Image (tube, rainbow, N blue to C red):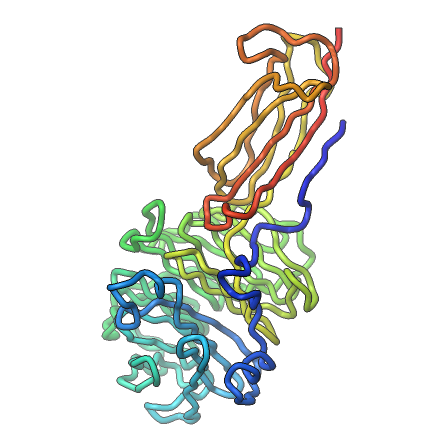
Length: 427
């Protein structure tokens, strides 16, 4: 059996084209110094969050729609860094145990109106700030140390939905608490083992293609990923062994507009990709400092309006678009008789538009088998009976099956994956 993959590099995530970024797809401290003239040192970058604030969106033009504000959280030195446009940056630097200070921040989320919520783990509370485009301005504290509803014991992460519900992983209380954005307790999700990262998905978010109310939680020493309904009913769980790993450290979670789940893994220096129900699809990246590589990746955020993906590792922030990988998993049978046919099984890592053409040894089109508007990620198959488009059987010989996929994202403008497989029709 001959299978040829054209463009075999990993392309589940791809860098935007040059005209979009001027070739700058990775931000490092050296790059910040070149652009701003300022030298900074960031210790232990641990989380990242991106959002397009309403007050920074000019309604008279769409040219600024893809320019989000990115917050980078450094736990060790208790600082929050953020960009101001693309040529300047600022930071919040007020360390301590006071109400308007941060001691050991570990999670961050925000609302489009400018409200920013930061989990201060060592202070066992959530701090609410207001971002005005230039500065983070303290507003109030939410919670305190304890075990009662609305109290925390080393909270870790936070995720806020379009319903203005605030999900906080309450690590040492082995639960997730749900509060409104004023800090009023609503409900809790139990049956967890020291939960860390969290991501809540709401059907009120206009940028999701399908409407769901799901909550994703990492727990069990960062070894397990859980899926719950928003009211705490467990749907499924998956750990590192289930996806064939010897070990893992699942760090942070984010979702794109198709509901695809992305989880950073600092131990294996990659990003794992799952369906919305946590069926494993693929992993992207490896250890290194070249393109498509990471050194201890932790933070990930996706601005779903344009599915802009930002991944933070120990020394940089990389900017990606959603791409597409695909491959043939099996052909059964590889040799077949006219009329009996063969089945081709193929796999796509993201939703894609797929076309399938079959050619003879003279490269003449025999059967234009398939041309989808789009199909879900995962395993697919086609059955070719060994016939022409008009139903007549083909003569014996070698035939080439060409499967072409294009992502549904903006990367469709420049990314195309092609697989060529050969089958044999015999007497």
